[in-house]
Picture 1 (cartoon, one colour):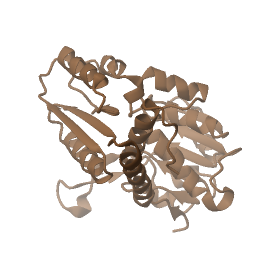
Picture 2: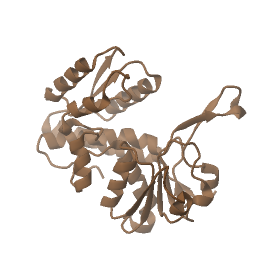
Picture 3: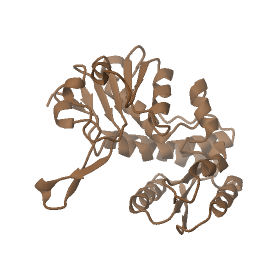
Picture 4: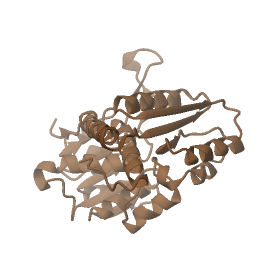
Length: 303
């Protein structure tokens, strides 16, 4: 194995420690605990696990966790009414409505109902627009985590400066691909966005110093697609059969064929243990940012 593993768990732990110190300082000097409200509609097993993890880590960082667990048949009107109530609650600094929502609820309408100042998922059009303009705001958590990990990979070479590097973003979703491309542009990278209709995708990958893979296709990016020494950030979480573990068993793999990529890349995130832990850590950091901005306290020092 030639590539350095980018340890998302360790980097996320350091960010959570910074968040915890910031939360303790706010409590000590300003007299309040930042509050994160999480809303779960229905009983999706994966969502239940994610919400439980978010609640636990929020508390571990010294912040208030406000949970609203709603039945699957909750109407869109009732959900939006709850969001509006949380918007008005001075003790709530961040609002996260766990996705996906039941099919009868319009997710876009729910996101639009969230106060942009409390939109810690960074999905409201106001916050999306701030990324386009290069203005400070609440940035989507997974893209934010990707950029932090890319900077981590270049810490020894450039001090984490990504200026001038060629970056390829594979995938153009509004959740990851589009915002991470904009964030990389704001870091002065030269960014190419690739997708299902990109001609000669392999050649595009071979030019890139940074590859962000977020397409949802298991092991799509092969090692021989990569530039020698490239930084590879694998956002994919795909469950595939694992017959070596026994009949009916599965395991998680990314959008990158790790076994071949690790022999070519300079640095690479594993799946699991790479981008995933950073998503929740960035959510907690956004909650601190929202709490400070709402009270006119400026940008907190989160490293």
